[in-house]
Amino acid sequence: RADGWNLDAFKRNPVMAYQHNTHSSDPDDFIGTWEDVRVENGKLVGVPNFEPEEINPKAEKIKRKVEHGTFRSVSVGFIPREAHWGDKKRNEDPEILYFDRMDLLEVSIVGIPSNPDAVKRSYEELIQDFPKPEPEEEITDKGRSIYEARLALLTLNTNL
Image (cartoon, rainbow, N blue to C red; front, side, top):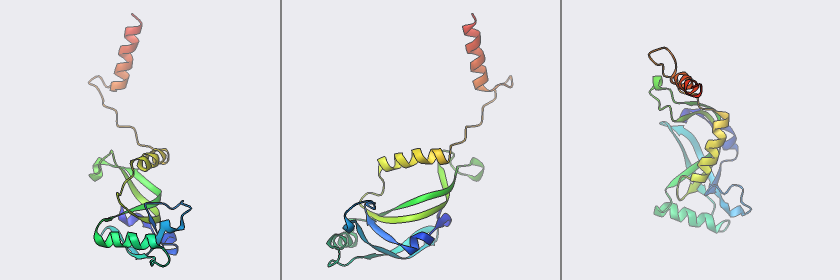
């Protein structure tokens, strides 16, 4: 949810990385900064400020690719602080984890805005912090849950 962004720390160090290479030993993977970062009309927006070619030739190359339209995507690195699983009563999908409050760490220029391996790792970590609730049990005609009815049938079969 866009209104959940905490931008305080990011605004003190508004780094623009290339392909999320924030732990790289290559300083040229930091290609600039972001200006005027804010939430506007339900979207996180900002203005890129690329390093000049004499400081970082890679940044100039990425800038030209953005201007040409080769790179059109950005991707964020963030820390989730609060989240909830979708609630049907609020017209939300119960299979989706909604982030309510999060701290922005970095925004990267990327060629493809998702990394399946990174998503998998993040998802596994998020499940630990925000466990998905168990679905409500279905009740049979006799007032037992389906699980209890199956357990009773298994018990009957093993006692024969």
